[in-house]
Length: 126
Image 1 (cartoon, rainbow, N blue to C red):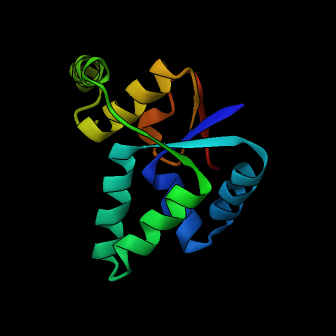
Image 2: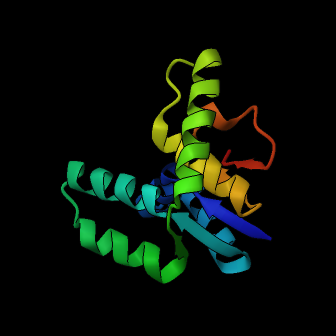
Image 3: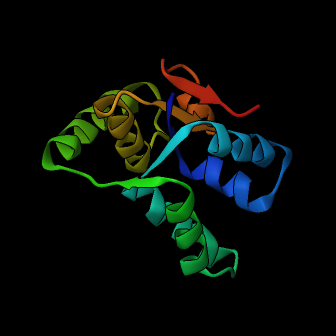
């Protein structure tokens, strides 16, 4: 199965939490991908935590395949963001890029983010 990891999954992985151990298992057993938008979120997290952003990015690149964003994916992300914000005011544009990437590539999204809980093709880290 193809799995798209969002930033919350990567953060759990880097923190080596119990949920991070589940992420490690997924990375070993599945074909894993990461949106380039998620790479930006991981870099931001690393800098906030006074960690090396480049080391985090390198690990993401080594353990998953990075997927770029096309114009059509960006348009889809905009539409998804518009629709999701109607029901959830805290839904973010980066979440929309992850959702759009998962939709375009027909991948399951691995996340801890409760904003994704109601969506199909999502595997929640519990």
